[in-house]
Image (tube, rainbow, N blue to C red; front, side, top):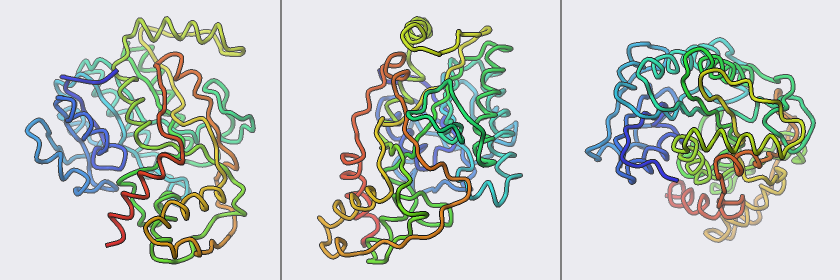
Length: 349
């Protein structure tokens, strides 16, 4: 199911995930609006989009109500990717993470409601599962939050449900699990683990693993994320509700729906397999040594575990499969093949 011939707002559209969504939506004959303040996004990510006649860039902030209203005017859908990511950033500066991730989220959600959008799809986070030890993670069972960032993303889900009940706006949250792929920035203090490791390996420098490397993650390639965003926006409401009922009947422990006037659901976005950081390190060395055999011999360093990190993460994607038809095509290995090729071309020059 694809989004075609629609007008779509992508907030944070100059970022890693947002810019990939922008490009795909433009390929499919949509009119696309990007709202970004370039706090973390990059203009170079929009290089191709800016040449497209059906693309509009609004340089603005989701914390500004006028910017939100301007960006969403006339749009059919919102794909809300704008946020301040990173657990460490939120621990060092919780106030700004709250201001952007909650304050900006509510302003954007309200503007979407006022504009009468068909559906508001937003980037949620696997950090919401917190300290709950069970694996795999299922959407209806969460633990205590381990960071300010995790709290902000959970509060977003609460607001989405509340707005759906009060105003009837349809919302779908996508709990991303360790997304990676082209355009993910390897630089900066808060860079994600894969591009950070890749950047070091290409320079023949020893990447640093936080902890002993046994922590594991459900790494999710960008193409899987693009697929599920389209499904979440385009799936008919009647189909979603019917399949949700089937999912509840087939899955022990899922609470009964308490929906108000609208639709408010969350879905895991992952591949459904996990790899340890040590396994990731070896896979990256293998993938990059195709381009430079010396990379095979680069050793990794180990340091203390990072505050706020969850030891293990693995998603159940049963709900997304059954309700949205989510069928991720890229495993960690197949995603790394494409990602390593992109990073080599981009970083080795």
